[in-house]
Amino acid sequence: MNAMNQLFGNLLKACSEIWKAIGIAQKVSIILIGIVTIAVISLIIYWGSQPDWQVLYADLDRKTAAKVYDIVKEENVPVKFADGGKTILVPADKVYKLRMLVINKGIPVTKTGVGWEIFDKMKIGLTDRQQEIAFQRAVQGELERMITAMPGVAGCNVMLNLPKKKIFSKKIARPSASIMVVMTGGRKLSLKEIDSIRFLVSSAIEGMQPDDVTITDNHGNVLARRTNESEASSFLTDRQIALRRATEEELKQKAEAILLPIVGYDKNTSQPNVIAMVSCDMDFSKSDEVIEQYDAANQVVISEKVIDEDSTKAKPQPKGPVGTKSNLVAVNNPAGGTNKESNLSQQKKKISQKQYVVPKTIKKISSRGGIIKKIAVSVTIATKPDGKEWSQADMKKFEELVKGAVGAQNYGEGNAQVVVKQMPFYPVTTKKAPQLPITDKISLTIEQIIHSPVVRPILAIALLLLLYYIFKKNFAVVEREEGELETSEVYGENIKPIEAEKETEEVAATNELIGTLHELQEKTTSDPKLIANTMEKWLKADSASNIFS
Image (cartoon, rainbow, N blue to C red; front, side):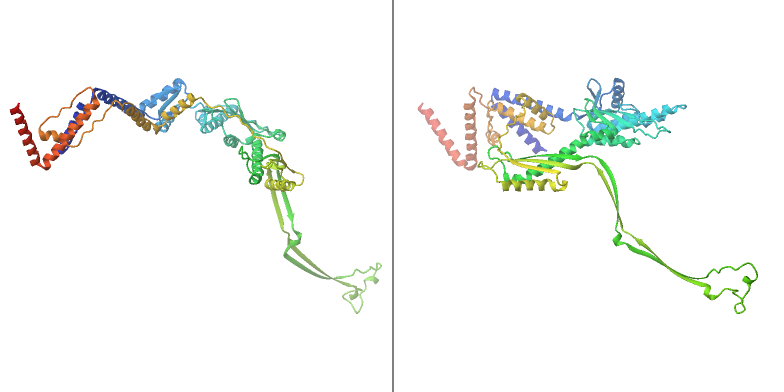
């Protein structure tokens, strides 16, 4: 403990000596740097202690905002308003906890329609029509909540058209839906997100197809429209157009990639010496086909049945006249009467029955569109770098390569057209996009740096270094050798700093004096006799000078 106190005391003495040794300008510089440093550190601590504000709820009415504000204050959570009191901001780590608390309190904070809770307060005696309307409102509200949960969607409205089922009508009308989504921050829904909304809504309503859903945004843009069978055959939908463009782009890249290693790039403009364009005629009709094929040559016997029949019958005899003569029995054949053995007939029959199994193949072919019916490919090749043209044999090979790359043989004869021509290429000048002014770039960069929590400490350190560099010229560092305090203590003297107007000369003189004293201390410690003899000579010389004077 004593050692620590002694060390701390020596440190204070050293600081005090340094403070006394420097001039007024250096003192002012140190004070200014200290004040600026304390201010910067205070700002860093203030920025670091500020919470990461996140939106708890936005676009609230005043009554709802007041209720939510009271709940947040009861939980002792920092809260502030934005957007004229319509938006409530809280720390990011408290958002989900406070949302659950607000939901438990039963405060309606969303603008979506009511859901299934509408049936919790149903009154007795409602008509069938009222119950149907309540059911439709509940379904619309649940769909709005699900769509609003998607990222980037601030809100939505869903309107359902549910036709009544008629008993004596064979024609059944399909239900339809109209959806308007409100996006945040100028964001737009992608094609996949639009399809997900259409499938989500159509799956919730019986008999509804994805094509029965119309989607628009809050800017009036039609994202997806309802199409029936007659309309679908007359024009292409957005998805079909996107599929056709993607197919054409893929075939274009194949046609260019097969020739690019051969023709290369232009040396001056670095542009490829081949350009291809593809046009596809695609069939988007839907069809289902079932094909059954029987193989009689490979039939197999699975059972065989043979029946033998042997029967004996008497031949019919002509009847005599009515009377006793025709009914008399012969003496030698009393049992048969007038019949003889020759009148008997015998019949034999053999029946063979075989059961076969014939192999059968059933094919079910379902086509959902997107089949290429016809294709046209146009390829332009630049002339050789030396200005010469490609030979006819080379152009024929190029055409065969392009046909193989795009699969022209798969579309049938006459359905694929490939044209390869060579022409001189000229450099294409493209207009550069207008750049932002330098002031806007600087302000944007500064804003990004200020809002970055990682850059704040780095910015503070850079500011300190800049201040040090600015005040460095007015601040002279006085180097003090180790053992300076010990030197003064050994000789029992208090070495006072010399204050002068010319700082550089005084600092040099002070350093020289300190160095002399330090050297004298070392010699005194190493050879005391030498010092004693020297002092004796000084004394004798001093006394002699006094005598002669």
